[in-house]
Image 1 (cartoon, rainbow, N blue to C red):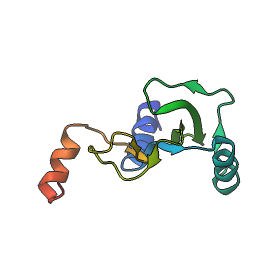
Image 2 (image 1 turned 45 degrees about the vertical axis):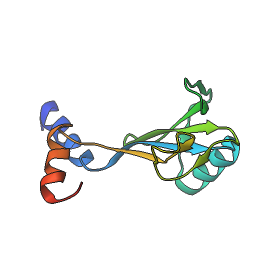
Image 3 (image 1 turned 60 degrees about the vertical axis):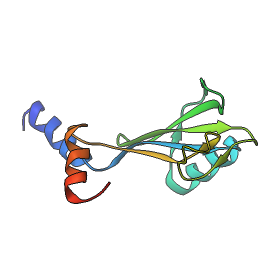
Length: 115
């Protein structure tokens, strides 16, 4: 197996999987303990200051080589709901899927009938 073949194989395996996940939380230590115990997620020790009004800090995590993401720490005045443009203070859980082509994939989804 060549290096190029190995890279293509790992890309093909990742396609359609969640590769980045943003999870809004209020209690970071509680969330870390829960996800570490339940799924074995690993965390970067130091948080990153976030830019924006509703996110105080970002706490990065990963599970192996496939899943990466961050807890988005927010204050009491914000709440977690489904994405709603009419409620800018609402933070959704935001998964990002691995795709080969960022323009072709939504076009294919629309052709299938999603939209």
